[in-house]
Figure 1 (cartoon, one colour):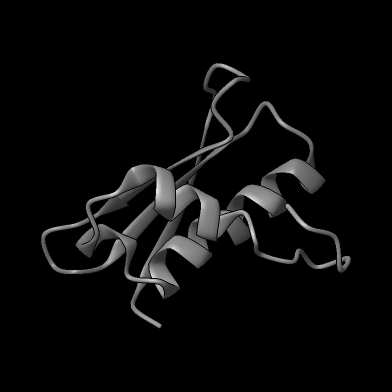
Figure 2 (figure 1 turned 180 degrees about the vertical axis):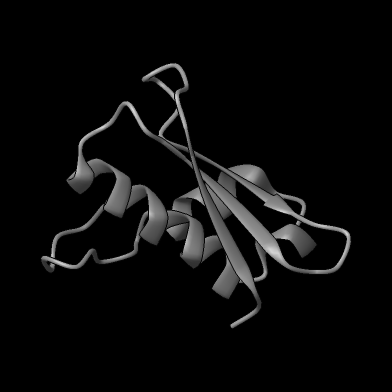
Length: 79
């Protein structure tokens, strides 16, 4: 997997994470520091799925999110 940087930010609680592809082809995941550890872990896994699926090279946002939510989290539950 590519280089991934993680930052914790206080964001609106409606925003669990924000993923950015950097100019050097690395990624930065901004996790919402206001959320629980479990929610942040789910958000981190969600962002990693976007990276693994090369979603920055795709155009259909609805299809991207549909496929990403098929991810099984660390507890074996769909997220």
